[in-house]
Length: 340
Image 1 (cartoon, rainbow, N blue to C red):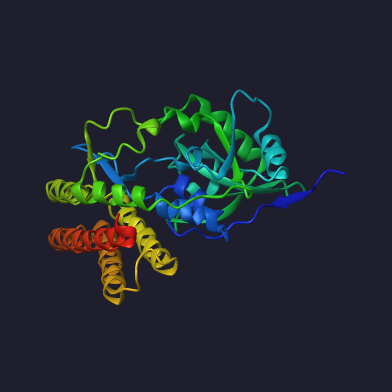
Image 2 (spheres, one colour):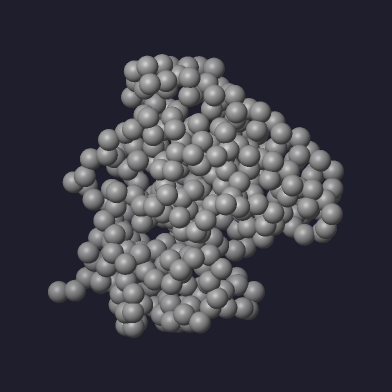
C-alpha cells in the first residue's frame, strides 16, 4: 500500500542567508558527525571584486555536493510530473534541493515575472495534494516552511527550464540528499588552522577546495577579512545612488559569526582549546555588532537616510577589528593544542 503522506524531520536552521546552506542546516538535528564537518568547514567567505550586483558567499558555495557525510543523487532528464519525483525520493528518505519558477510559488511574490530560485523540499501529502518546502517568503521576508499544491509545484518545475540562470548550472538539476549515518568524520585541527589563517590574511593559499570551484577562477575574488573593505566600497556605492542595500551583504557575515560562535563552543567542549571566558565574551559582542549592522541596513532601506550609511561604515570597521582579534587569538589557542 502506497503512503499517503510523509514529512522528513527538519528544524529551523541556524543560518538562512542562502537556501543551499539552510537546507543542510535544517537536517543536522542531533548528527554530531555532521556538526563536526560543519565546524571544520564554513570558514572562508568571499565576494567578487567590484561587482555590486553580487553578495558575499561562503566558499565553497554549495556544500550539498561536497559534504562526505551526505548520500546524494542527482536527477537529470526526468520528465515526469515533479510531485511524482518528489514522492519517490521522499519515500526513500531523501531531501530535495532544486530551483523552481517562483511565479508559481504563491508565497514568493515574484512580481508577476518568471524567476528561478532554489528551494528545499522535505515532504508531501497525497490527500491534500501538497508539497512541503522551505524558501524565503513574502511579505515576512524570512526563510520559512510552507506548502505548495501539486499543480503549482509541477508548473514551477517544468517552467524553470526556459529561465536564465544567473548563478550556476547546479540549479538546472535536482539534488537528492540524506545523512549517511554509518559514516564517521574525523575533525582536522590542522585544516581548521590553515583555513582560519587564510581567512585572517584574506587569501586562499590552503587550496583545500580547489576541486570544487563552482564559479571557475577565483582571480577576482576578495577573501576573508578583506570582504569588510568591499562592504565599505558597497556603502560608498549606496551613498551615491538611491538603491536599496542588498541585505545579504550583512546577513551572510552574521550567519558566518553564528557558526563561528558554535565552533568555539565545540572546540572548548571537546578540549581542543581551554575554557576561555574572554574569547566567548568577545565573540558574543561581535555577534551583537553584526546583528546591529543588519538592523541598520533594513532601517536604511525603509528611510533612505544617508546618515545611517555613515553609522554602517563605522560598524564595518569595528567588526573587522573585533573579528581579526578573535581569529588571531583562536589560532594561537589551537596551535597550543598539540603544539601544531
